[in-house]
Image (tube, rainbow, N blue to C red; front, side, top):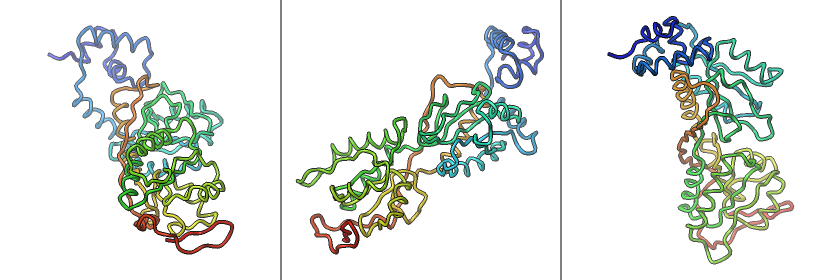
Length: 352
């Protein structure tokens, strides 16, 4: 017969409810009592029933009118990517019996105060939004919470992360660009920072890409260092003359448009970072809807299995992107065709 909570409680000298909280790593049980109960459970050969645990958790969640509280924590006011993930995360949270609240660290005097507020509001699961490299790293009191990270950057946060597979996204971009007849793609990175998974994956694929694609006899076009400002783009473009731009994100695209660049009239453009301009800007869809839902699913598993605090073995869950056609990427002209027309201003504007 399986070992029951009553048997563990009797041998441990505590109540059944205390045993349940200790084995699930929830509630107010001291570390000493929790270790004692876990040791007794191991001696008796206790093994949890995952189906019964899931059923119990579902019943427990339904006791709350609004749902068990979770927190989606932002450190940046400009985090559009995570804001898109938040939409589907809220929907998935409600489906699983949770209530997902939004918190911004700027609303608190310190990260320690934020931790206390979240804990006393009953939050036991936290989703940490994508961070910009210039921001102070999020440093909450992790031992009180189950934690997952969202976004494009593997921050200095001791948690697993859900992010898009940017490497395969860039592979997809390169494949479509080549099939459309382009032969001199120019890759443009914004200043992503040394700890950014996005930059690592883009750079990794770009090295692979150059070893496989057939180039014309003239010198192959090489990847360029990060362009920290859109004003540097013009000089670089006139020097290398790529026939299509592969940009790391829509921030770069918008910055260039604001400086008077026209796509695809002057040069076609592909966005291989996050892209929510369906039909307008060609590129990859990183599926923020799937990322948001996956964040909640992963957090739910951690809460139900009592995985709280810093994770010694972080796991990266990657969502596969898909191609999105757009007006900024027409079919390329025959290779060797002569550009037509010349524009106004300091630079020559070319039209195919």
